[in-house]
Image (cartoon, rainbow, N blue to C red; front, side, top):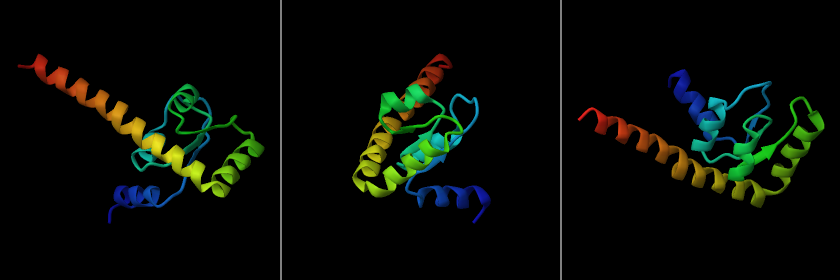
Length: 111
């Protein structure tokens, strides 16, 4: 198994994706987690996370908020499941749809 495949397998085995980053718009790890249906705990892409209800937004460097978010998802499997379902719903409905639409329009321009 190559490194990329093993990383994908490890992500799929997780219950949640924790992505605290300083000053970044949207990390690939968040998209990878979404493909696996994982709820996200992050300080980036706050509007996206709020609008899609697919995770918990925390302040960068706020260890208490991060801890509270982790414990909340650990102790509430129903919340973790519902956030994960929202992730999948949004990812496949919107993100994949936008990629397909963009590729379709691009292919039509080349005809």
